Length: 197
Image 1 (cartoon, rainbow, N blue to C red):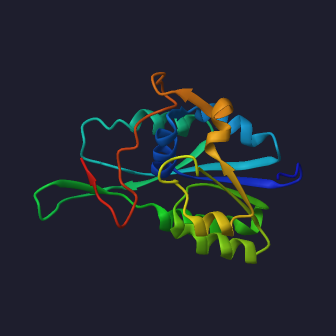
Image 2: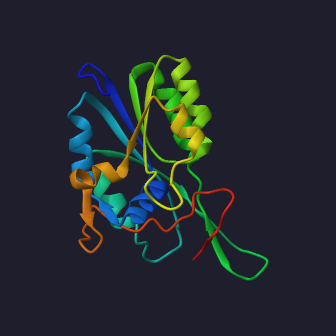
């Protein structure tokens, strides 16, 4: 799947990876994730994308963002948008798809293999475009949750599909064992569904 000569970039859709690991019942050990994906080739960089609620006094994701920032990840954030729906419920929206896709296109000339941590079907066209540029794209998500966390068209488009459930022994930590490398992604990144906060 990986070649030692490949230059690899990790593109992590933070909210999507959190939802996927939560559906599988474990937390991600981000230190181990970096080490594991640094072994099969030359890991150029790992990008972590998430939206942040700027006006909150404390955000549960802030410790994770700070830890990632100090430990080898390039963290890409933007403010989440907060609004009240017609039923009076507070909603938070923070989609990072455009930022991730633009970065992938800009990085493509210097990368051989992209590893996308997301099951979001909106990324299918980005994957297809990278492949037309001669790049390999592996997608990490899961089919072992109900419903599956990966869109079927994204899975079909990818050069390789890696089920996160198969990596649990290597990258997983029990839900109860929280520290600076694990936090709750509390921002919805889906354009079609809203999150009650």
